[in-house]
Image (cartoon, rainbow, N blue to C red):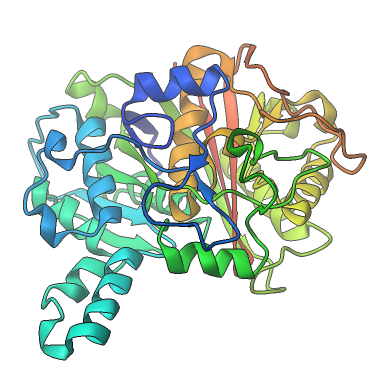
Length: 407
């Protein structure tokens, strides 16, 4: 038996704000969250900018034993606190958690390696492994709220958050759960993370003096992504379960598909067929035709290769591609890696709720190979009943979600 799955909670920790209202206001006003790095001294680095979370205080979100938690887990717990919004949970047996993260506790890994090098093995924190393990966020959320249902983490690089949401949707749809907390979380802005992405020529080096212009998806002068951090969390729930408790319903999730390019560890398949197939699969799963999609939240990383191939893939799937608004909100948030799919699912739902499409900022110079309607520079009022959200990750991982206005 297939059941209807609705979204009843949203939470964000992001470079554009640490609550839904602030985040959305900044997003639709085209505010960039990119600035000079403050988390460490980047003076010796080629790249000196990132999209950092600002003014984050874990104590505001009823998070206990903060010193025992890596930052990626703190972000997930804080966003979950918002999304649950004091929800009374009557039965916990069929309620679970699936959280995506690409890197997990990288900050803890580096800190403890430094302690090992400087002070010796006896000084390494005995809680190091529980802090850095990728499933820590999922486990901590379940422990805090006594959720005894399905629980695991997903790590599919930059598709992690979207895969987590999709798998949670399936758990509810096919009766393994009634409620799932899901999304993505990431805290990769540490020296080794920035250095590694810089040396693989993935992040832009050209905008240290103009941080706000650095992330420019689909623009001819794009030169790499901007590293971001944060969390995007959803509460998914079976429809009748939500109605019985009088929950606010933000949207319905109606489609999900995932696959693998099986082509290259870091580069997308040149013909875009894997991404195209994932979009086709999501349409099929949702029982939709291509013309039913009102908006696509693109993966849109601001790298030369990704944006061109994603554009190609969209055109392969949608005969009406040039009539569909397609925006990349990474132009404002930076690239949150494993949290990107979670945050962009929140954005897709808010787009439906508010009938406002957020823009692709910094779109100045047209690329002849990127020739879709990217909602340049200013948000757009438009009736959006159905939105698609794309997430593609290293390893060739593709995950696509489809959300619909709830009626």
